[in-house]
Image (cartoon, rainbow, N blue to C red):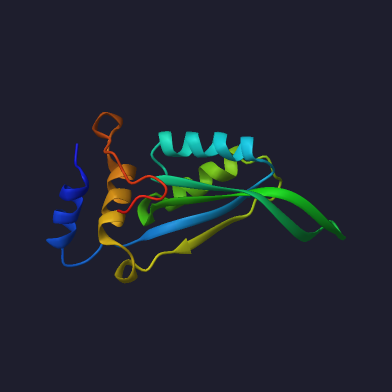
Length: 140
């Protein structure tokens, strides 16, 4: 398993960060549904990491009426190569008729190369070769 020093060394020896990182922004009806999706998507290696932001209030027009609802935001970090498969899986497991799934491209030159490398490895590695990645609040 690689550690933080290994990732830093690999990042330092690399001229450019990996290309094609994406964050999929999605909204979910509740925390439990979002957490279940996050676990499936990370376990299935479609996403390297999922960040859940509970307690969001959404206002939108649906079927001619203004709706207000409580939702949870799920941010899914993945590679450009896996983004389409991730999008398709989110759409398949999402309970909404028209789920919010927005792909936000990442600027490799403005991002931490070591974190992008970690993301790339998490999505590409087989289950038996998983690395320990940074946790919420830890430095990459």
